[in-house]
Length: 144
Image (cartoon, rainbow, N blue to C red; front, side, top):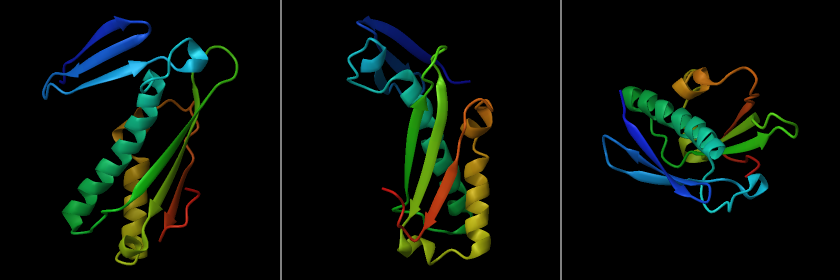
């Protein structure tokens, strides 16, 4: 169990403290929802959690198999519903794997890494109501 304590700071800002490490982060409501947009919104953290979870479990897999993934990037685009209730409608995930990484991974390694990303704990926790298209650009050349 992980203990996270969250304090409301006023003006739609919260500060969360991670119990095990003492690290803190702030959230702010987005400008389009009465906030200042000066930090991650709670739904931004969902998108962030998805991307970092995918990369983390891929990194675990790579470490176990002796693969090097340094330099890999991920871009997560969060789209909210336009009608109430307000919620995340879609999280578009794009991986960009630099050529120096891609050239060291055979097709079975790439397939294993993609499978790992699709089955990270955060992805498996998201409801089917959220679309999560995922693309991989092996050797670079994504839309970023």
